[in-house]
Image 1 (cartoon, rainbow, N blue to C red):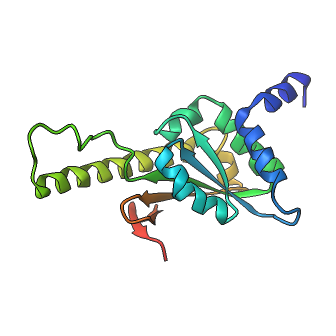
Image 2 (tube, rainbow, N blue to C red):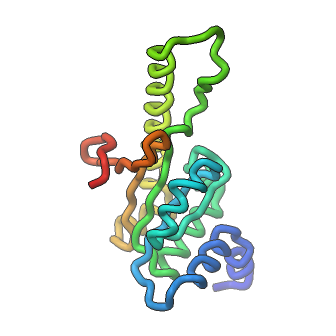
Length: 181
């Protein structure tokens, strides 16, 4: 690596986070999984803690749209670093049911239960579409696609249902989210 590349790697906050997480793991941990999650206080106390408990490395992005952070470059560099230097074999994008910006509390008047449920359902569907779009962008990203094509890295998507505390996985072949298990 050239000196400028080394400086870029050491300044990458995502790689710093990965190094820190790897340093606190047992020395025998191999074939690691990496999850990309939007920075969201609700996820930090629920889904992210469950992922960390399962030994998954977690990177939080600033944007609800995970692919926006990927396009900025630092995240893509961290994914490539993780796959080649840190024995990461699996990348999971984590979306959640509260990601879409359709506020329920700012409705005019007092909507009934049916209307509130319909709006909530629209928010969940919009959040799923956002995660599917992010997934599609990650798969073709110039730094991620070769890792997938060479079998160095697998990619998955999980959708966290905050209301129930459960996860759904994205079934790419059927283009649908299905319950885990």
